[in-house]
Length: 201
Image (cartoon, rainbow, N blue to C red; front, side, top):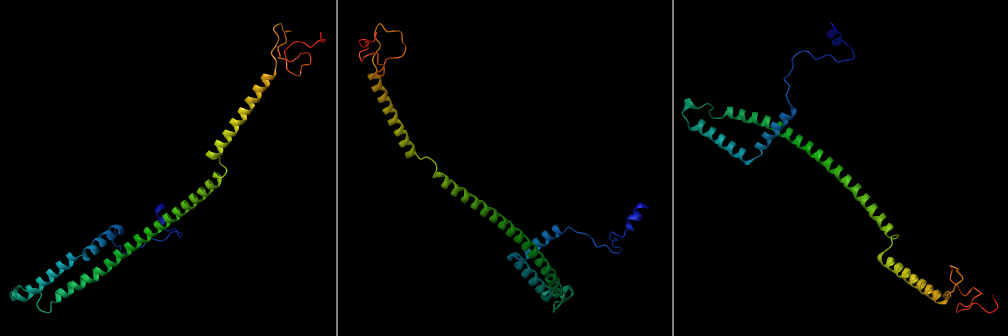
């Protein structure tokens, strides 16, 4: 009852009744038609066809009259060739259509790949340009060498100044007063030799 109600629904098309044609696989039929078209497009087919027609002519011309199945005018041969031509043309067209479809898909795939490669190329070009711009801000080897040489010179100058200052600072006397800091020229109580000035004590 439920199946009958489903079949009577108005929002679904009614199944076609009557003679049902046999179903076939279009892909398998297409491959078969392509194989036939390829076979008919070879030199072997032309040679074999020529041999068959020549044998047909010779048999129906030279054979005894009771063995001839297609006498002169070769009506049956004409019918067979017409049937072959009437079937060969659609098979060849079907094979060409399939080849056209494959070519179209291949062309679309090639176009898609070309678009992707173009996008990749443009991206790489932008990255290379960005790297070139960034390389202008990166320190080069010569710049680093000059900076290191300048720093070395500054360190040498600082070391020389420190040595000159150390030479200027007098040494503490043997009986020092217990001060930890060294006496320098700013201390007014001591002379340059470390002895106290007269009158300071």
